[in-house]
Structure formats: C-alpha cells, structure tokens
Image (cartoon, rainbow, N blue to C red; front, side):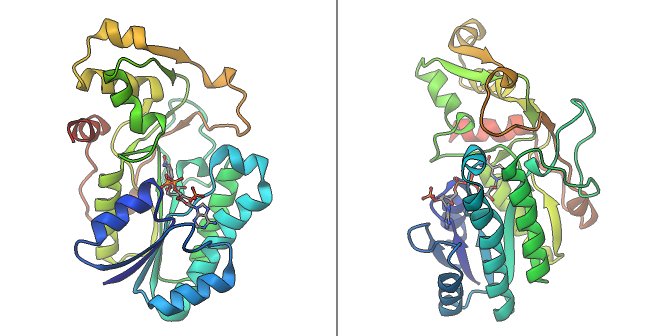
Length: 283
Ligand SMILES: NC(=O)c1ccc[n+]([C@@H]2O[C@H](COP(=O)([O-])OP(=O)(O)OC[C@H]3O[C@@H](n4cnc5c(N)ncnc54)[C@H](OP(=O)(O)O)[C@@H]3O)[C@@H](O)[C@H]2O)c1
C-alpha cells in the first residue's frame, strides 16, 4: 500500500512512518516538507504521491492553541480538512488522530467516555481538534478518527516519555496527581490503528491502553518497573497539582476512554497500561 504521513517527525508520526515502511511504500512528510495549512501545497503533494491512505499526525499543541488561536484552527481544523478533501478526490482513505480533550473530564470517577458521549471540550486545543474530526468526516467518506490519550514512546521529551529514564538517572521529577486519563503506548496505538484500518469500518474510535492513572501514578509505576526502591522514588518525585499550575489552557480532569466500535468489530481489549509501560521500559 502507498501511504502518505504528515507531521512525520512527531511522536506518533515518526513511529508510524518507521513501522509502516516495513511493509508499505511510505511517503513521510515532516512539517518542513509539507505545511498542512497550505491548501495548494497539500493538494499538490497528495496528487503527486497518489496514496491509497493518508495519515495525519500533525498537530498544534495545547497551551500554544490558547496563545495563537488562528494558528490552532489552521493546523488542527483547516489542515485536516485540506488533507481529507485531497484524499477524497483521489478515492483514498484518511486517518485523523484526535484526543481525549474532546471531553470535559467531569466528574472525577465517571464512566469512561465512549463515542456516545457528546464532545464538550474545555479548551481551544480540544475545540479545534473536534472541529478537525468533523471536517475530516464531512470531507471524506472513507475516514477514521482515532482519539487517543497521553501517548508515550521513545523520541520525545515529555513527562510520560522520559520519566522512567529520569528516575533511573537519579533526576528529580515533578508529577501531577490531580488529573487522570487513559494512557497509550505508541506501538500499541499503531498496531490497533492498522487493525482497525484492516477491518474497513469507518468511524470514530477510542484507542488507549486499558486502565486509568494520574501522572503521579504513572511515575510510581515507572520507578517500580525500573527496580528503584519506593523510598528513593518518593525522594525523586515531587507531587504537584494541576489546580495550582495556571497553565494557559484548562485541562479536563478525568478522561478515561472506552472504544465501542472496536468491541463491535470484534477486536480484543487493549492490554493494561502497566503492561505496555513495562514493555516500553524494557525496550
Ligand atoms: N502525544 C499525546 O499524548 C497525544 C494525546 C492525544 C492525542 N494525540 C494526537 O496524536 C496526534 C499526533 O500527536 P504527537 O504526540 O505525535 O504530536 P507531536 O509529537 O507534537 O508531533 C506533531 C508534529 O506535527 C508537526 N506540525 C505542526 N504544525 C504543522 C503543520 N502546520 N504542518 C505539518 N506539520 C505540522 C510538528 O512539527 P513542528 O514541531 O516542526 O512544528 C510535529 O512534528 C495528534 O493528532 C494529537 O492530537 C496525541
């Protein structure tokens, strides 16, 4: 299959490009190769490549969206629309990644979000991503929206990606203990995304590892998996609270997700995040 990937230098895009290139012809376009907000360039590159599948991994990040709303809409809503229109013109399929930030995250302890829950984002990132989902679904009948959450894997310097190594190196880390979500190993996200694509049932999916945690609980588990004594982990991890942080974008507090469509199409449950993290830490 010929696959065109945008945002291919990011966490999801880089892993996806590497994995899919084993069995497919992959055109992996970084931000420098293609700015998805440039409609003419999108049309030109997609028409040149003639892919059967377009996967959009480009995104404008959470706090930055509040600071630059016009860019947030351009990257998270208009860019996906341009890609979906270009894919549709060719008869290709598109996969658009989206986020648990579609949901408000209240009350803490509620049942996991499914596609039957109405999106009600609490920040501009969530709003522009939900608008991007709708734009893609409207523009291309052959579309999948894959909502995921708190993705971890190698190659990015976020808390979830680096906390295990940081603790192992004796570095102090700060971990938030008052927001909770599903978390997702990037390799599991890719496996499940391709399984969904192979089934051919278009729609909106929630792809996350089973279970829910806070960043603090994730850090404790990472330390445990690295064989670090609990009192040493307690010394290295400083507990902080989202409510004190005053970040530009509000964060939904509690956003575990469950996937009704994968249950319907008969795919097995995703493994628990502890098991996925154990594999990441091992590798
Ligand atoms: N990581 C998570 O925890 C998480 C959670 C939920 C959902 N998701 C979703 O998963 C998808 C992939 O996220 P990620 O974590 O891989 O993001 P990422 O690591 O931040 O990568 C995003 C990539 O998009 C590129 N980009 C930004 N603006 C662009 C533009 N106008 N045109 C083309 N490329 C552009 C960035 O390049 P520059 O850096 O050069 O700008 C970056 O390489 C997104 O849809 C995101 O909403 C991720």
